[in-house]
Length: 429
Ligand SMILES: Cc1cc2nc3c(=O)[nH]c(=O)nc-3n(C[C@H](O)[C@H](O)[C@H](O)COP(=O)(O)OP(=O)(O)OC[C@H]3O[C@@H](n4cnc5c(N)ncnc54)[C@H](O)[C@@H]3O)c2cc1C
Figure 1 (tube, rainbow, N blue to C red):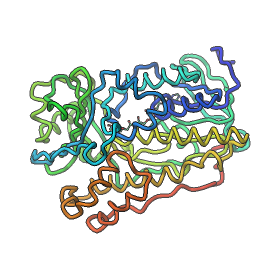
Figure 2: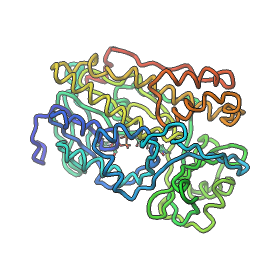
Figure 3: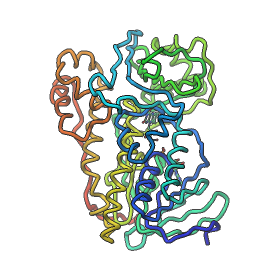
Figure 4: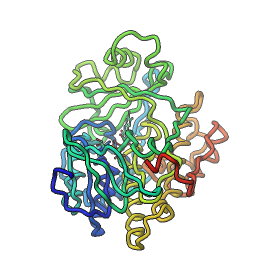
């Protein structure tokens, strides 16, 4: 028996309380469904992924988060700025110049606090959200997910049943791994090394909250510089795994220091700064699942797939997938039919949008391709290009960018989801 008093039965169990899980849990609770959300950590916990995209505005508004964010100390983000490997800085891409709307001011968020706010909001809206609960497995009967095996840390797990299980476990990707749906992106075998700093130099006025993307010497990698509240700045380098780790002596902190030395856009900003966190490493994070749902189960956020950190699209895609999946789950529950057909209804359109972002990721990593040159040759595409950078990817307008861009660099063929693939043997486990 589960030790804690769980007032089941549940309509939905959401595993994980990052942005994707909290979005799905909140919306399903708002619809009036009985939602249990299980998170293995106790919040606040550290997480990378601090820079929001402007169009997070819409799902955040639906969750009732905009006023809470406006009252927070989170730094306002108005633009993105690129610095080349020689230290030459581009003019900032101000989101409001091409998209004048209140959503064009967004936030740089310390994820521990941001995710805690989302979780508290899910509770306020009626989700039974538990921290310190580890989900060990998803339970299947006759190829259909029927619940989870879970328990508080240190206690033996027990089965808990629900009509739908949502996997929002982030890069752990519990179900995608179990069902063998996980496909790495072979061209994006990257790693990231990152930490927080106090006292880094930042710009002033409207540029204070800008995300800065700065190339390392000879474009071997790139840094993000994300200004957070209380004078903390998130700094991290992304590059090929082999480049960052092969044949180097020393620990990740030494790798980070060496790369900072090689980056003309970051080095001067850290002259008077000191590191305030441990140095974190993540690698091989670009992949996606071949399906987004099956009978009784759904994958959202990073548990469905993750592209690359370059455009800060992760939280946006987590929120949007959480929102769209929640609507599909609501429809399935109303029809008493939590089948793959209903639960996957959101997947194709969402995945098409994700593929648009993926094309832009490939362009960024193509040797010899430059967005500056693209803009010079295609000035009329600028609005739609910035549109993709703010998250406007679920529209045919993306082709106004990719048709001319494909003349300048090879773009990947879009991937599509497998529909109604037969449930694998693993699913019966
Ligand atoms: C280097 C790097 C930089 C990034 N920078 C940005 C950025 O600037 N902006 C941006 O938008 N995105 C960024 N991202 C992406 C962003 O971090 C993710 O896309 C986002 O956190 C996904 O949210 P999620 O809810 O899907 O998963 P997560 O936020 O990872 O949440 C998953 C939750 O599930 C819990 N969990 C896992 N397993 C279990 C289990 N078995 N039982 C119970 N709970 C479990 C975890 O503890 C966690 O709290 C970055 C990613 C990387 C790798």
